[in-house]
Length: 286
Image (cartoon, rainbow, N blue to C red; front, side, top):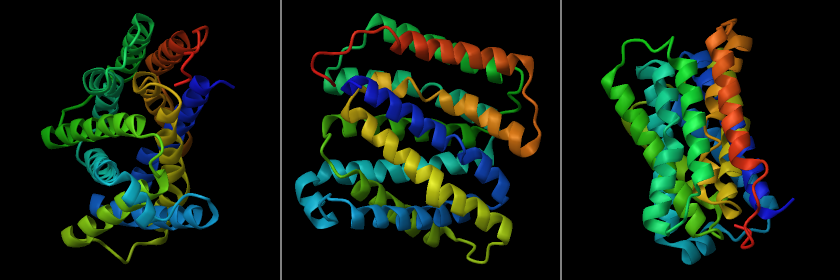
């Protein structure tokens, strides 16, 4: 597998794993600060375990090498998680996924302005197709928007898009250290804001599943994707979250997707395939 396609696979797997976030948030029936704290707590356990068995440098060495870029991605990842989880609890999931669909456009714009990365007409067309597919999925279900939730979702995708470009610009930075620091920052913010330490079994199941497995592994896959592919192409896979989240709602809450959801999913997948399959890989490899 060439480097560019490896980046596509990492991006797709990352978004598929984090697509379960809305399922676990809904399942927990807890407030956003409690979810953020416990998810970050269990994520930190996984990051520490990976750090112990991997050959990556320790946090001190990582910060000596990365300094401000590593601080920036840690703060960005923390803000993105805080904003996303809170947005899901304050506005409809449909509104959030519409906004998430704009991530490829934001990421491509930032990459063009700050990294000088060129985005082909084919990729822009693929982005437009996937965005249209997401709009088809949610067009029938968008309810009354809650302004603060929608604004938080916008903040989440902006921080997410900025981080993708920083990871792209500094490919050798320690992912584990950056994401682990983000988890610590989220935990500190949640303690200051107020967190429920006495969660019930249902909520515990949700935060363990989200925090110890799906969310951190998804973030690790996705933050490694920019090592191999341009950010505009990595971001093109974000609508996977919308399609997959509908599937998890069907499985977990018996919410049978409407015909428009199926049609939109086909359009989204078609857009991603158009933007990836059949393209000549870059000679630069990334």
